[in-house]
Image (tube, rainbow, N blue to C red):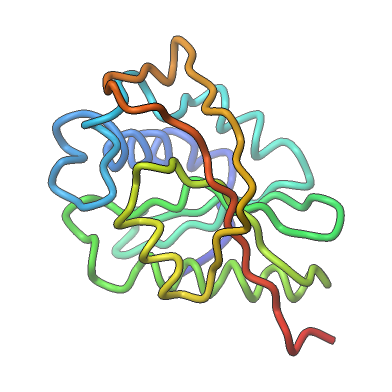
Amino acid sequence: MITKAILENISQLNTLINSAYRGESSKKGWTTEANILEGLRTTEQELTEVLQDPKNTILKFTDNNRIIGCVLLVEKEQQLYLGMLTVSPELQNSGVGKQLLQQAELHAQALGLPKIVMTVISVREELIAWYKRNGYIDTGAREPFPASDVHIPITEESLEFIVMEKVFIDFK
């Protein structure tokens, strides 16, 4: 079941997101960043601040009272920004991510926003291909990757974000 996350979900969301993106547990799934980044993907403080902003929504996918997936949605001018699409590593390739993506698109349309934008680390070729299969295009725009004490690059490859988007043609 996909519903909006609330502050009481922060701890479970934090554990899920970090387990899917970083560290050994993330290597069970295909969306890991553990081969290019160390550190945490997010913190409970960051997630609390995100949820306290009325322009932000985190949708959670719950199964048997366990959060197994989530996605961050941020209202920005005439578009919805999508980030932190997460599925528990052992459940990736089960359709949970696709369902969250579809719900995000419905959320954008319900808000009257004609497109979704996102940034993806340029070296994440499988993930970029997955988004393309789901109707997202590479806009050609690039943004610098914000290395910090949280996002610690461990690869020699230059990291940057590519900007992807999906415009709803039949949007009214």
